[in-house]
Length: 261
Picture 1 (cartoon, rainbow, N blue to C red):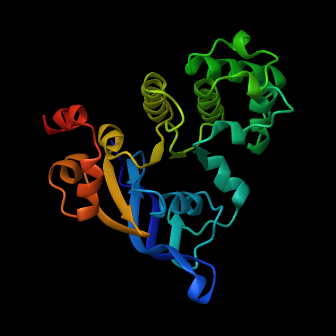
Picture 2 (picture 1 turned 135 degrees about the vertical axis):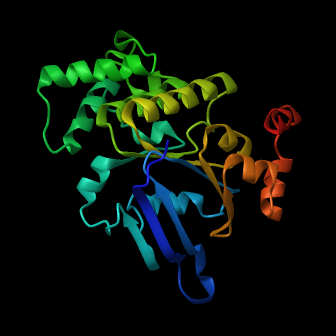
């Protein structure tokens, strides 16, 4: 269950790209908070601002105006922030170097830590992380990213999270490139991560049906604004905003039936 500790908070948060008539307001005057160990889904179509907001949470983009805090303070030390806040991106292949083996890159993840474990402990923790996502360590021994499937690579990103054990996970469309069976297993791994590491998860998706199953709260985004928010039941069963209703219309009937029960 979420605690009362606030992980992220925003007040009048705005992010503008470009200048003058060619400017685009990607984030438009957002005010919200996310609690410790809460799973919050940012849901909306392409260009709604959800991925830009994720990058602000990762401190990859600085807001144009307004206030954005992590645990009540501005983000100053990027290295410290990345020890605590880590992403899982949509395209796992873009996150790995094709010239180094997967195992070597997983071991390199320890470089961000304040204190590195011994070589033996590194090897053990990599093995434990791989087993946690149902990968036998010998299966990837000596292998490179291009030798693995999309589902396997997505699990490599999750194994990296098991290694780093961050306080917060930003999961940006982590299941969009895989089939339904792999999608279900990746969601299971995310829930396993949350339980074992007591993490806060910000889940970015265009699929409100998916958000319904995994979230404590859902934020519906449109043109840089949060146009509706609430518990999954509040948002899915008692929608108030037209953009929420459009997203619900896109859910296959079988999922609508499950949600309505």
